[in-house]
Length: 135
Image 1 (cartoon, rainbow, N blue to C red):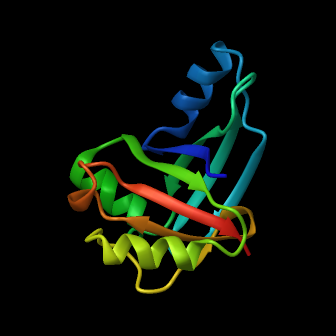
Image 2 (image 1 turned 30 degrees about the vertical axis):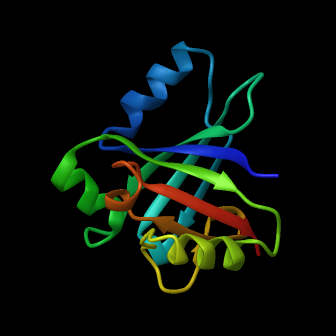
Image 3 (image 1 turned 60 degrees about the vertical axis):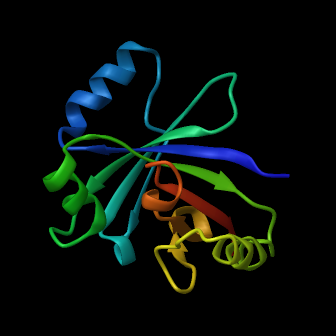
């Protein structure tokens, strides 16, 4: 069964976003660096809902989040869906066969010991979608 894992939000003022979500009763529960993607991910659990928010801070000026912030500014970056372990390759193959373009030719290591790939927004209604499975 697939489920929403998180909503990734590119931030250019982490302190301000922390303050906003604190006022709304949410706090960062975990922080993880993902050097391969040049990002520091700050996770906020969503009470009473599946998934969480992921505040994405660009730590590498050549990384994907830094580039996103330069071109589009802060805001929702992607939706992430968790697949059962062992299903990422099958789903990736099906996506490609159905004309969806994946960002990576092979899955990469993401946060929380996950293997990840992204479906290019040009092929899915302008939304960047991440598909992931446990490593």
